[in-house]
Image (cartoon, rainbow, N blue to C red; front, side):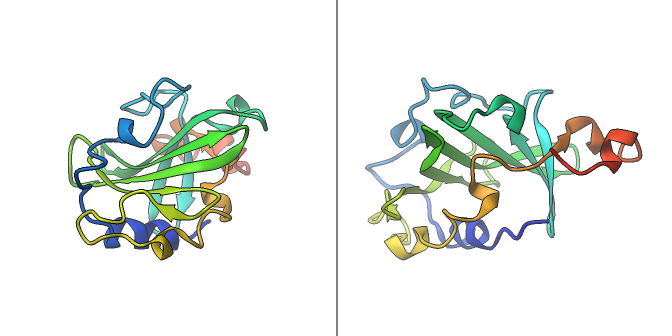
Length: 168
C-alpha cells in the first residue's frame, strides 16, 4: 500500500483556484487521451491505500511507457466516487498534477503543480499554494505513470480469485 502524504498535504493545504485558473481545462489539455473523463469507467482499477481505496483510470495495460494523456484518481466513499486528482503525462513523464475539491460535485480545481519544475500553477490563489507545496511527491510511485491496480470488480467481489493476486 502507498501513502498519500503528498496529496493529503496538497488537498488539505490548497485553497480554491483564483482568477488565473478556474478549472482543470486551464491547466490540463483536455483534448488529450482520458483528460476529459468525468466518472470512472468500468475499465478503471483499484489501488489500496492506508486510508481506503482509490479508483485509477486508465490501468497499466493501457499505458505505454511513452504515454501522453491523463491518469485520473477517485476516492471511494461508499457508493460514491470523488475525484481528487488529475495527473497529466507527456511522453510518460508527469507534467501537471491537479488536485480537486472532493467536497464539490464538479471536482472543482483546488491546486495544480507543473513538473519537473515543481512549480505551483496557482501561487496567488486562495491560501497561495507555494512551490514548496509541489515538491516531494512527483517521484512517488503513487503519482507515477504505472500504479499497480486490481480490477474494479474487486470493489464489490473482493473474495474473487483475481482479487487475491497481486495488483497489475
